[in-house]
Length: 348
Figure 1 (spheres, rainbow, N blue to C red):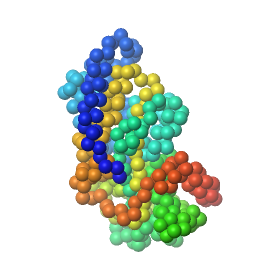
Figure 2 (cartoon, rainbow, N blue to C red; figure 1 turned 180 degrees about the horizontal axis):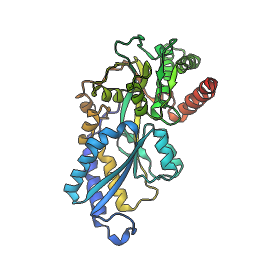
Figure 3 (cartoon, rainbow, N blue to C red; figure 1 turned 180 degrees about the vertical axis):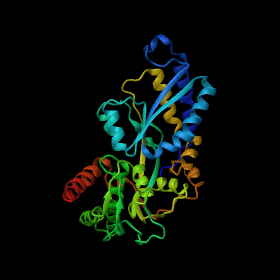
Figure 4 (cartoon, rainbow, N blue to C red; figure 1 turned 120 degrees about the vertical axis):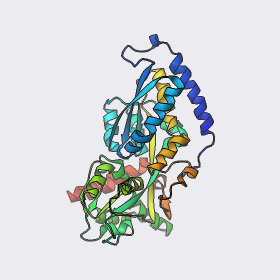
């Protein structure tokens, strides 16, 4: 987890000023006829499934209120939520979006490679990573299957819900958590063993009974009573706990922290619109917004704010995707060569 930069506040203020100058100073003759008038504007946000509540209930309303006070302008948010791979495909195929919050930076890279955006998300605060969450295991009350680690998901007779790695960022993070946990354990022992990691993932995948299209769809199936266990984001499990649904959370001693980037979709965006969208993007890292993210159990770059959330679990041996070579290496190695070619194909 990177320390929060105390320069963000000063940078945000400077960008705020610049955005207001551009937004309010540009003449109406510079805008296309079908664009929103200066008195009213729309920002279209696409997000991976689990960001929905925090955005709709806290962050959108707060930004709308602050923007109205400072500029007199009303901002409307249009939004679409789903599996990270799904929304990335939609944007790449031409769906109109101004900003996306994605589950994995590989999706952000795809949008840039396919010319859906000219922006490099890494120029945003914290290298474009908005928040993180460790991958955990949800189990039934009393933990009847005695699950303590990812290896226990391979036991005979267990029924596992696992988000689809084809459509869902959570599905890919779950694969990395299971496979990577064994890589990290054997690496610490001095003899990294990819074969052992493959065998673990193969045993676990034999027990998968459903592959919903997003983390939220997977949680809904588990909530309905399907399956004995679900691998998902800690944040999604904690949100469900607040609904008084009966289950337990198992925190594997070695697990990956998912990292969620923000990207501005600026391939066809007027200057005044870009200024406004960039300001909203940076607002997502403001202290006010980070408090809202933590309220909904996302871990932010600001550790002081994270420390106010008592429900965050301690992870003894966390790791990041960079320790598996980053997504540019981990996706072809694990998702394509191990899961698709060696495991999924055989199961079908």
